[in-house]
Image 1: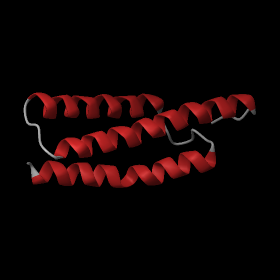
Image 2: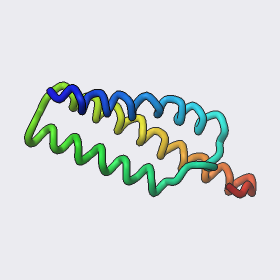
Image 3: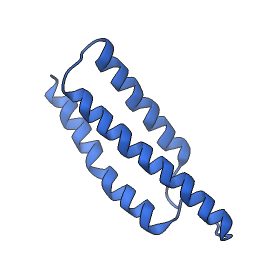
Image 4: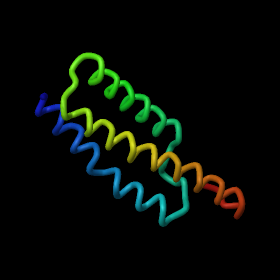
Length: 91
C-alpha cells in the first residue's frame, strides 16, 4: 500500500462532503463546473482501474469513496441546473 497515495486521496476526499452539502442547500451551480467534475470522475475511474489491474490494495476503497462523492456532486449540479432553468435563475 502506498501511504502517500492514501494521504492524497484522504486530503482530496475531505473537501467533498462540504461541497456536496453546499450544492444540496444552495440549489445553485455557481462556482461549479460540470466539465471539471466529469474530469475528476474520469480520473478516479482511471485510479480504480489501475488498482484493479496492477496494484490491488486497500487504497482502492478511497478511490471508490471519492468517486461516489464527486459523482454525487455532479448529480447535484445537474439537479441544480434544472432548478435554475425552472426558476429563471442565471448562474
